[in-house]
Image (cartoon, rainbow over all chains, first blue to last red; front, top):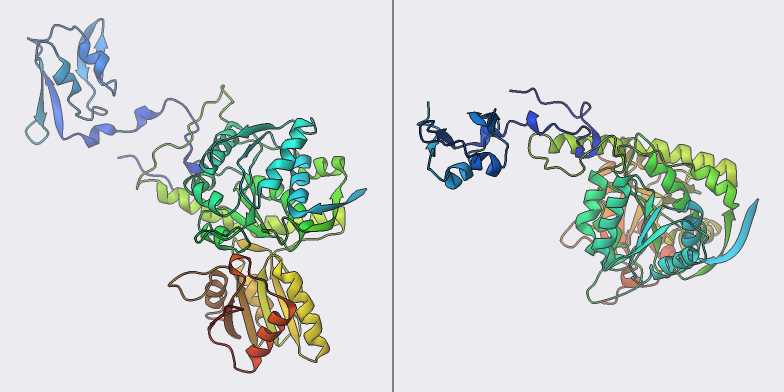
Length: 96
Length: 388
């Protein structure tokens, strides 16, 4: 857990004074179900990569290497859009 | 070099705006503020200012335009009254929360309904918790002086808050008075340049205004606003002193009129103080030790200064030109009365609610209040000049 700052340490007015820091916000903690990808079924079409609103589908050399669970909110859009049904949403309590 | 003119309160404020020469002014007409916008628009048309004048479709849009322009790094003003202020409500809070030093003359008028265009303080009092600095003016001269000083006060680095300059509708806004304007060059020098902080138009340093701020940080940002308000009185005092050196008209948080040895005192905001001073003079001639505390700053509320100023009085009448339905008297009354709790000397206080919807109050009315205070004829909350 990040230590939350006091009122004297933060910019006034609720401003965010540096760009590119959404990464520091761990939206993964909001998730109630987790996307599990079946590597056998996945064709690496990357439709999930296009649709993911949190840029949580991590791709290297045109292949999905992992799902960024620090930022994935568990919205399930990837599972819905996957044309080969390679992603299923599993409730967090049941996921390993 | 000063320039003496015959001006209405609205005209004096429009001239202050001309000298401030804001980068952006958003305007929407509402009585009795309209003449400010109207006269300022003619300054724009005549090329006397460099201002981008935005004609908007409502006060909600006026304050929204001000927020956007101020965040972009501009010096920004608007002006409003009563229902106009009510319509911009949501954005009034946002302007203060984002720490944008917008200056807004508020020509005080009763809030509907029934619809009424005349003076009372129900408009500005409703905004007392919005995070804006609120100063009041006794006459057109003060409306001008306060508007010029408001820019300096709000923009101070340790403040950075928006400022409402209140002036009583019609009584001041449309009454013509002798007003001394600063020489234009002197005014420009006094006001100075806006020092921007995180302007949105600085594309090399991108910033985000107005992000979601939940239970983890919202409270810290509110605490910062409290701190900024706590810095305001000192800034108002130093700006008022500097203004005094320039013009001979020194300003502070309040003005004490024959108060030091007063047994009976009154407190009021705005133009009523002129009438009350005449009442005090007449009472003194009758041998009554009357005094007056003219409060210039309502937000931040100068607790310590008010208690000090009134501690020696035995009786204090607190005049409220607004009402808090279901509350325990008007807003000025409840705050002053509670300010005295814990003090060694506590004067007997009574509330006089008066002047709603522009109902006149004259010297005799105020003298009667002072006399009723000492003769035990006053209730805790009294209504001046309302028919039974």
